[in-house]
Length: 270
Length: 302
Image (cartoon, rainbow over all chains, first blue to last red; front, top):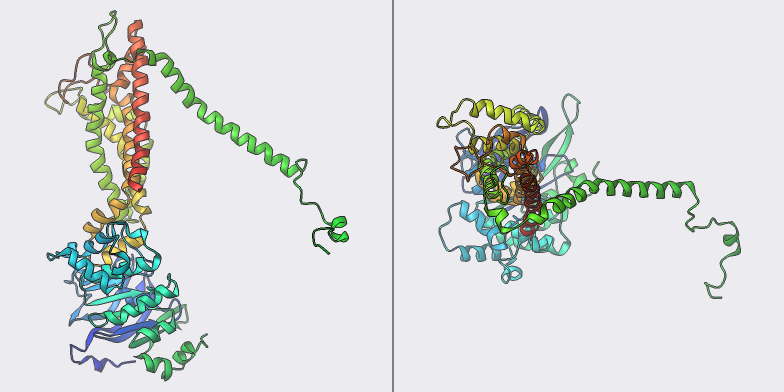
């Protein structure tokens, strides 16, 4: 686990930093004591068993947790030198810089073109919309499949195509970071492969943070991996998630320092 | 040996037959309750068929261009129509819609999007349910006391405006409830999708969730309008009646339901016949509104 002293850094190297982040739902602590430095222009994967708080931490990175009643956060999430949870910060502005793609494909009930243009329009995009739509769809590796039916509903696409449409939609707002919450868990292997290939392209321009249950996927796409685990609470009442180990993906899967990480990545968990 | 020639002897002797046997008590009860449920279903639609048939029989023969365009005759005279009442019903319903739709949809949006489970939202939901159960005549008396007897509108007492407000009070719970329910049916993922790419709450509601819930909201609103258009009790106290063409929204106005009420009990045959004709026109209008609501549902889903 990185020590707090590491926070004195070169600001261009790290995109986001979590300092002693703890998140609770109501009075129930879900995850605590997370220190993490997410490097810029890389893919960072969160792995770990169900209920370990990895999705919760991901949602904390662009303040999506604000939408959940009773969710409170402790600690600091630093993005570009600013604390995302400082009182003067506008969460809408945060989400424009840090876009999100969800587990279930959720295209808007509009045409493919409008799905992409929506985000750009509300962000005050003044340029050539046709060009932006094409560029976004190309980046999400779905242009060839959709260029002849941009006026058709987003629902007319297959699940894998819908998910890439949602990624294109997130790209269209030109964010700096794209958060993906198990983006392939509802997709078949072929669609998963396409999205993984796309992520290799995307990380040239964006910082990507992905939550995945699929360890092979973490190995294939990510540069850094954080392993989250559940540990019994100090008072012995229930369990709480924590970041067990955070290192380069190769280290996590080949030479982890923690026994729990070793057990999890080799399938001997629990 | 071909497999189909003879089954194994042991199986043919000892296995229980799989054939359907109507004499079993479970099968007899099954048939009995199927027939019973079907019978009750038929009984349930008999009133509708009888009402439509009877109104058509009594009023359908009077339908003509004159009926729809002329004023009702003076008591004792023949001929005439219910043109002023048709126009009046449209005017009063329009006033009611102009009040109830913005307030109701706005209130529904607040309940579903801004405060799903706060104490105030719970209180408003409970209040809406109570308001939906308030008898329509109470609404009429309420508006009578609030607007008609106090003459707040330019010293006028009975007026189309008062009638419209009374109907709006009746429509409001329907509109709020359908908006609230329709918005709650919009998948949460759709909201997250919009908010996750930096849409504000206002943009998310107006551009994503409201359009997604448009069909059920529109259906509910049209049904609410149809329901209000047929109300009589609140209009007797508020819009009153007028044998003449409408003279602006701050004067008494004729409506179909009040015309039916007035004319049906008059001792003149011409008026009784007009009441039947008006009943027929009103039923057709409400039927039309219901069909329109269904059409809106189908049209926007495509």
